[in-house]
Amino acid sequence: MSKTVPSDQKLDVAPPYNAVARHGVSPQPSHDEIARFDFLANFNKFMASTLSPGNKLAYDKRVLPAFLKEHGREPQDRFEIRHAMNKDPFHKFWSALKRNSMEMRQQNGRAIVLRQIDELNAKARQYNGGAQGVKSTLELNPEIAIPRYQSAVDIHCMPGSYHGEELPGDVSAGANYDCGIFATTGGGLGALTDGGGQALVDWIKKERPGWEPRRVLDIGTTVGHNIVPLALAFPDCEFIAIDTAAPILRYAHARAQSLGATNIKFIQANAEDLSRWDDGTFDWVQTTMFLHETSGKALPKIIAEGYRVLADNGLMLHLEQPEYSDAMPLFEQFLRDWDAFNNNEPFWSSMHALDMKDEMVKAGFDRDEIFETGVRAVVDREIFPEAPTGEDEDHGRAAFWHAYGAWKNADQMQEAAE
Amino acid sequence: MTDQVFDWMAAANKKAKGKRPEYFDDPEDERMLSILMAVVGEVSVLRERMDTVERLLDAKGTISRDDIESYTPDKEAAYERGAMIREYIYRVMRGPHQMVEELQQAEPPVEEVSRELKEI
Image (tube, rainbow over all chains, first blue to last red; front, top):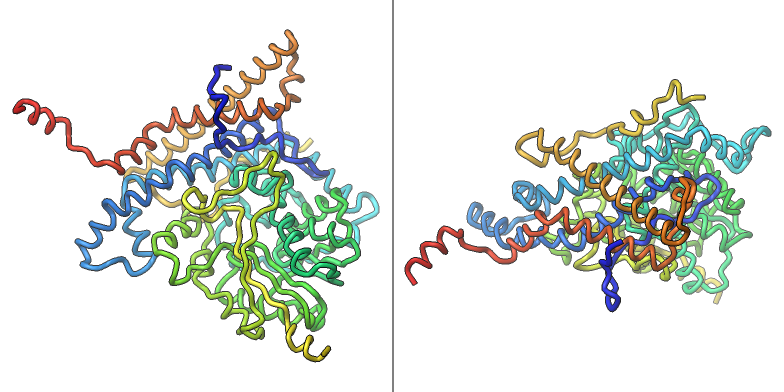
């Protein structure tokens, strides 16, 4: 090849898709399928770091001045900025490129998965129980209805969403979701796309050294990326991972089993109604990047039910992108909202406008029990990059989260003990 | 075999539920950009394949298709290939990239400069 790399300089390039680890139900990519994800990973990096700053320039230099002239005042909210920016030629083109990148990621992922769907289904069946029937660690309940907030549109432009099937009983939704996250995050989530789960393990080991939860509930688990590292770190603990979509759970269970996380039970359930579990059943109730995929009425129900099934001295933890507080500039709120309207995340905007602390107080927590912290993906830094935050951040996709948490009645428990 | 009844190529193209936003005044431009971006991606794929072939030939002198399919770059090769893709992206994205520069520095039309030069 031509020499494009100066020896004294390290360019910011995405790690190769070859560095993605394979587990028992990983789709096997061909040379060219790998190359497609290599292109998209680097293209998304280019979009976030090199082109995206043009949005702020367009806003400052022409969109805001024109708005001021027309209205005689500043924009009042992120929606006014969006409507004004949607007419700007630079922002329009940037958005169109970004939308195409998201659509290409879906097409590329589906093509890998669907051409080998028979093999993938066979592998999943083997891990899920084989000829002996379904293992007791996978419980599918066909009576669970797909809620409107999951069916109204296909979330993040993933055709068929989490609950779609191409062939009856297949695992294509999970396999496609799993194999393409590398492309959208530029490898920021690590070899098994579990940098979030690894970060939770690191965080809890520092926060509560020696703590051994008895039972953990993971709500909206999808393919179990974030729960498998925890299950492996706490092998004596019982994990329950729930989701409303059967196809994603079939894949999640097979994936977890192949990775040796046999202490997770995957159950098809809706977190708005956890009545099958008694009060105080769990020592840890958590969601990771899930609440923005629910709805205005479902979210408080889910947190209230989570509070009810959480034991005293137990931990509730939610990982999300940062909320749109008054301190966050409106332009940043607008940029962080891109996925809401351009990548089929219809509750994203409203959810990030909620004060999660208020929501947790409404569910029953004392305000002084609640804490907030930042959690950065833990990945092998030899191969995978640290996700940029700030100027170069790919808003909405950065592998850096805002955690909202609380230890239930921890103060009272401590006082009682003393 | 399901491949006789299940056309995975058509299925891979399935549209996501939810009305697609319109970015351009002319809807045909949406389709043109989607075709163009797919080709941009495929050219990158061809370049990466060619790079694999060249590296294998350098190392072994003769290769098979299996060698190409199972090729895994080492750390240095992976970085060089990443840089190659990055360079390619910068080349094909010159137009949008220059839009950012135009936003940084507004410039008068050359016609205006021409009139100015006539007078100085």
